[in-house]
Image (tube, rainbow, N blue to C red):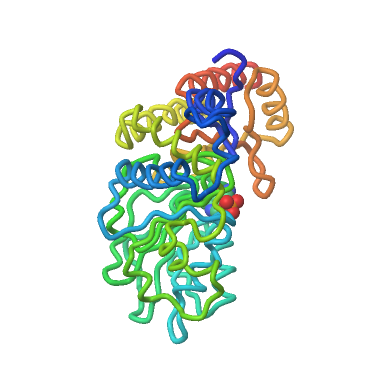
Length: 362
Ligand code: PMP
């Protein structure tokens, strides 16, 4: 690892070292063209090849069935909070949301600007210490779609199994756990994810859209906010974030070399078991923030007995080469983000540090 930090940042987050090194090699001369990928037209054959290959790799790795389109958009996952109700919530309908944490709340806030919304499951009363129960949702016939947040990045909870919604489109914000485990994509009308946690650098948002969703979309929307604009133009209606898409391409090749999503799911489980075990075996020195059956395999949140001790933990962890362990400013505490590219060795080192720290301060 040389002088690489133990990077537990929540996003933008760690990228695989191999990917960074390949990008470095190709930085000034992309595959013999004498220019960087950043310096060429998005209409060039070279960029179109990257655009196509990246879509195809995503289809292959995520087992996306026929009838779905992969888009590379801008504006972050936050713009999807707006585009989804703008396109798919019609007069007389209700948009159903699962209220699982801070990111779900932001999505709900935007949907309210466009029409009727309903919170059909919530864990707000439990301070978002768990994922709401998705087993018995009551969805009216007038439901435009059901929106879920697969992984709450701030609170550290994760959907363990997705509901069946029949003919009602299921829409998921998978920003912080996409490609961390296999998912049955055929259950979804739309999946979206900002890239900067599991897919690549910031600047691009991946949208996976079932093509029949377009038939439900509202007419007369501004061009850039219409999904069909981007579908018709293969994500090249306007200038795309070409370097970010190229980086996703390299990350997807890396995922393939790791053995795909089943292999990543296993290693993510092993990685996070190390840290959750350190919490659970600490005799209450560390306290996990989320109920065991809702725990995230991407963002591990925990607390110490006092804020002073938490400050000391952050300070000492930094001195030992760990980065990004301070919890989100809105909830405090500590958080270790263990996305795909965070190596097993970093998690081992963190578990070891946690054990040592508790011995010294317990
Ligand atoms: N949803 C989730 C689950 C997130 O974690 C984030 C970013 N942390 C967002 C949405 C917002 O993403 P962006 O910054 O790309 O708009």
